[in-house]
Length: 546
Image 1 (cartoon, rainbow, N blue to C red):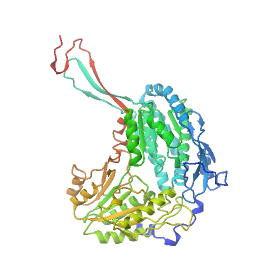
Image 2 (cartoon, one colour):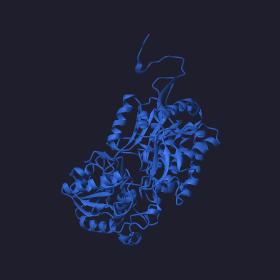
Image 3 (cartoon, rainbow, N blue to C red):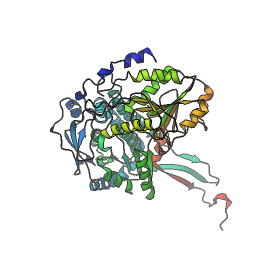
Image 4 (cartoon, helix red, strand yellow):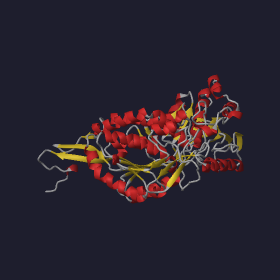
């Protein structure tokens, strides 16, 4: 491991948490919670709230005006359990009212020329960039990821706005030669209609951004239901977009928000007015959503579970691989869809790599997500801590070993656990599904074919990465008999995707694609158009009908 990295990580483990009381990551509970004695914004966070036009008590519905008559939920910090705000969520009726308003404006927006739609997204990009610092800090407060990751998530939204702006002038179809004389044949792409976005807690800003920026330039209004535990991020983003819409005399319902619980989400899934439903979350929930949308012949875009592997071959740059594994397995406290869950090590370098990996893990600083030098913040909820503990129990029960970590830091407030490395068989049941906590399962592989077999053996297929210097290994890995994941990297982490290409996975990951490349086509409907300018009526395939 490089000395630079070790210097960056090396902190006494007794200083894992130096001031948990000085940070807050918001977690909105799905039930009423009035236990807090505080009814005002903490002075520690007032500057962040003020810059984002947030109050201690906020309305969670926006469709041109702000409202909400549903349950009031507390925003609870995963760092120390304190209540830092409240949100009055929406109801199914308010979702219905919002969709009615969106129906009234969809014709106006789809008839707006695409470059002009792109100009609105450009202004949204600038408005988001102006609020990058406080919005990134809010993500860290509410979700619990470290500040560089919080700001990086906002930057991802900004980047996709840049992409969408260019896309607004390059949305194109295809001209195809017709077999009939005097005929012109082409493919035409048109807006699909209202897009619904149900996003997850781990990326409370970026996932909406991927969908919203592309959907808007494609000519569609967007309605958003964020995760119930990250309502403040949803509200803050919507307030930023609202100002751009008001400035340009556009209806606020173009970027609607209905914060709420499972009832609101289910109503959105089942409503025929939502032509495309984008869902990010677990495979079991995504399966039900896909079935519900399919029953009404709607379109769904599913970004579901991942069980991602990194393969390190015996010819790999081990220092590069070590740094990559550390980021991919520990970043966001193991709560990314693309987090590395499985580490496949060639038997020749296995012991050497494990020794270095354990040393690196034992130097990770756990603590305040807003404090410089922290690499691992808290888990998002108490339920996640329980999943962590059950995962460790399953490892032991199924013949695995805990190599390092395996502890809940329950001697302090917050949802802190120690990132963990295990040694276990790739066939163990606990390895087959992601736990969504920082537990990394390690195992030996004999050669590349064995690595591909193990990589592809799970039901999920989101992300994967191979570390090698061998060109033959590289091209096999990304080829038809290589990794079966939607992301097949070489010599970089399984996480940290750019926006230029489509993001998504195969198998039980759902098959959806968001962000770059031609993912925009999912937000539009395709028409095959044939124009006869000949004055005659020749039929295809030479058919005579006279």
